Image (cartoon, rainbow, N blue to C red; front, side, top):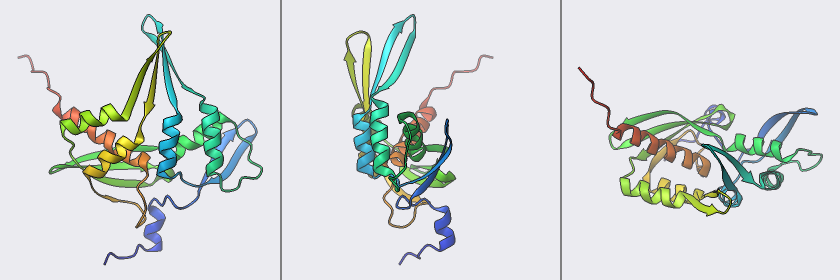
Length: 215
C-alpha cells in the first residue's frame, strides 16, 4: 500500500481541492480574497467560450483580442469565489486571477529513455513533475488539428478557439505518472496541457536539423 503523505509533504504538494488566497494590486489598494481551484470541466468550458480574434492591419501588423473576455472571466471568477459577499473587481482583475490560477510553466525537461520528465512551476510556487511517453508524429498531428480550431472571418479577421479536452485525451494516453500532487488529486487540465505542449516543443527542438559548420 502507498504510504500516506505527511503534513509536511502535503504542505509542498499541489492540492486542487484546497482554497487559494490571491492578492491583487488595484486602484482601490491591495485586495485579498479566497478562491477555489477550477475543476477540469470548468476550464474546458471557459476555453470554449473564449474567441481569440486576430485582425490583420496590413504591412505585417496585427492585433489580437479575446472577444467578451471581461464578461466571461468575471462570471467565471464569481463561480470560484469562496466568499461571495463584498467582492468588487472588474473583468481585467478577474482575468488576472484566473490566469494566475491556471499558470503552469515548464522549468525543466529531461529525456529518460522513451519519456520526457517535465517539471512545472504552478500556482503558489509549487513544482509538479509529469512523466510523458514521447509522442509520435501522428499523435502530434492529430492533437494539433483538434486542439486549436481556426475560422477565417470577413474584414481580415481570424478566430481561434482552444479545445483543452484534446490535450487531456493525448495526455492520458502518454502519461506514465506524476509527482507533486496530493494523493488522489485530479491533475488540472491546464497542467496537462502545459506539460504536453512542453514535451512537443522539446521533441521538435531535438528533431531540428542543425546547420553544417563551414570549415
